[in-house]
Image 1 (cartoon, rainbow, N blue to C red):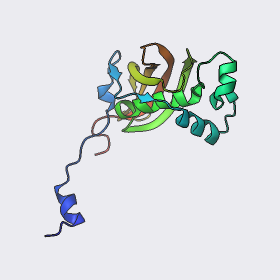
Image 2 (image 1 turned 60 degrees about the vertical axis):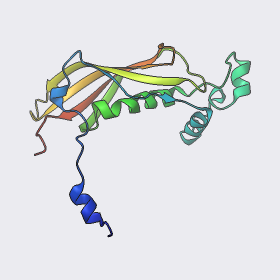
Image 3 (image 1 turned 135 degrees about the horizontal axis):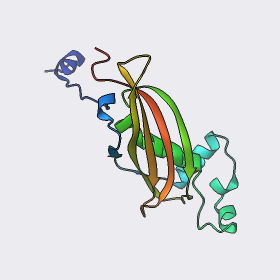
Image 4 (image 1 turned 135 degrees about the vertical axis):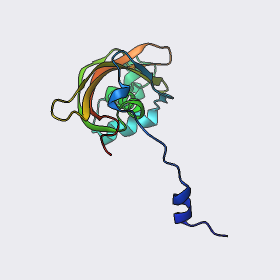
Length: 166
């Protein structure tokens, strides 16, 4: 007996994804899953694809000559990784990304360091233009495997309320 695509679709269960405006009470903290170990290959690929040719990010000899035990991870890769770790919890059902403020790099990561992310709701208010949506700002921190803050920033998104799409 052969299973068809239609059979599979008829039995599929839609998993709810993301959070809505009502889920973002100021002060609520989200510890984002897993974390990510940043490798030399990740870093060289990212730095090359973004034309970021600082030799500290792709030349271990140069990095060592400047006092680093291995190559440094491109800080923009750290930022985008930490940002990406937060998407599932914060903005997967989001309407629009509104910006990042107060981005601070606290320390460099080396090849093989692991970064994790945690976000706290800073503010949440209904949109004046569309009350079925809200504007939410989170403070996100990226930490290394020793629990040191390596990056933090504020991020703001326009987010749907529950039932806004029905």
